[in-house]
Image (cartoon, rainbow, N blue to C red; front, side):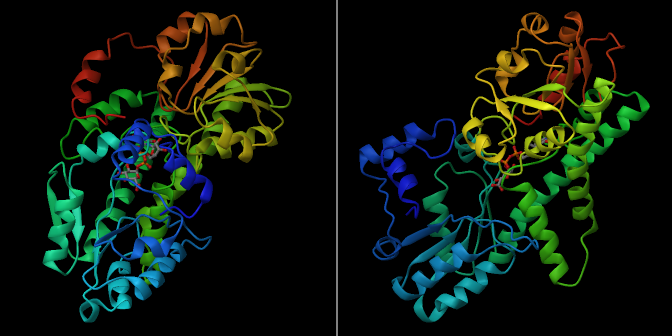
Length: 422
Ligand code: UGA
């Protein structure tokens, strides 16, 4: 059930309304086989189905609380229409206590309606591979039979199962996202320190990540975390703690560092240009919050582009997937059809999202197009030596000018064995 008629029609034709690699063929496969049907009518899915999976949006409200209106609307429909024995699975990320509360609202034991909390751990851009290769399948609920039924139905790839109560499952999800967000803020602070003491974050992160207790995943310094999950979930968990009367200091620090990371990047651009931004032309490569998606929610590019324009710069941006979405959010930015057009006449190239396309840029060609050869790499993904060979002045996040000459590939390979696949 998809409430938006346009999105519903797209899904019905086997076209995903979002950019997610590999999703369209899967939708078409389901539609052709008759195993996937789409409707805009809530009532029609509430009856005749023994398992209902709720995957509605749970965004943040301005005060940090989670907006549960979409979930509550479904619960109201369920209370009225759902048949005895129905298992309701909450896939949406919801504050601790939501599953238990919903089971009580639905009548629980009296109506034999069970709520099973089954949080999702996939990442945008690699969602399909993540489902089959998840580290664990978390399933929480008070009714053993309902929990087992959900495991049989939703864990076809037999990934290791963690069984718990509803609230524990909800907290596993928040705890995991908040921890990863803190890890990213932590490595960003180490990178910021590297900038001050002329150390290279690539070496530091590789050496830290090889400690199995730390792990190499989510240890890439850059512009901080964006998207629809980490920022929202950190805020929601901090709010949940606050409403229980205590301050979760580490989450506050993670959020603060994340905001500062964008501001520091603009500061780096100012320093790299060595003068005011007034009248400068900046090529911005990448807009989406990460590669592989057209999602602009909480994308660092939004704050960075707005700030650069405020300071008098002209921003010409490119993104392989997110330009249609970005055009609505960044009216003051000019959009280019490809990265080279974006770089034409630029005073500085700012890399904001590490799309694979940008790793293959022909910097010799780019050198002949830009006005000044200056690159600020917000994702530490470009090869400093290649850029230097074409006369570019390179600035990364915690990457000093290329002075050491040793070959980093060996450490990268060792560290990469445990690294984040994305
Ligand atoms: C995240 C979690 O990784 C998933 O496990 C979870 O299911 C999902 O949220 C969710 O709650 O639905 P996602 O937001 O798609 O997934 O993306 P990530 O790949 O985790 O990246 C999040 C942000 O952190 C991105 O902006 C990315 O650029 C940034 N990041 C990630 C870093 O800055 N450094 C890293 O080392 C890793």
